[in-house]
Image (cartoon, each protein chain N blue to C red):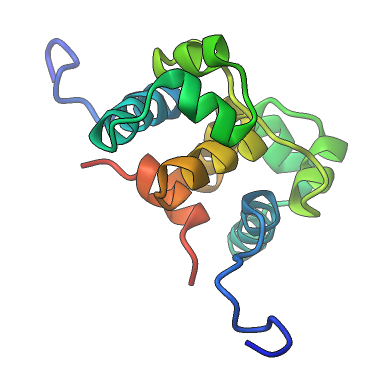
Length: 79
Length: 79
């Protein structure tokens, strides 16, 4: 644990959620704009969420999980 | 699926999170006030979250999960 690389500190949930969201969206060939329309959220907001820049609310997380067809809990589970 | 009781519509994530949070907090004998101090959130806010009344942010969900010692993803997983 000398440099913290193997410490028990996980990556923040919003970073993980953003990474998994982007991967899920791309895997189904959906653009940020299409995801925004489906989830009723703005395209630029989607981009910020995917980069882990937003302290996203649980309701919006749920909308995005539904829109990419993944259970929310699975999107937050460490790999 | 006649009355919707067995439909695929799950309970909203914020309701599940609140129920699981309350159960976890009580199972370790922690008061809302103690949880609030540990997570640096107000006691009345904890009560609202436990009742599913708040559109809680991912950062606050993570603070509360850490404070009761559960992984956030597990708190959202259907039973």
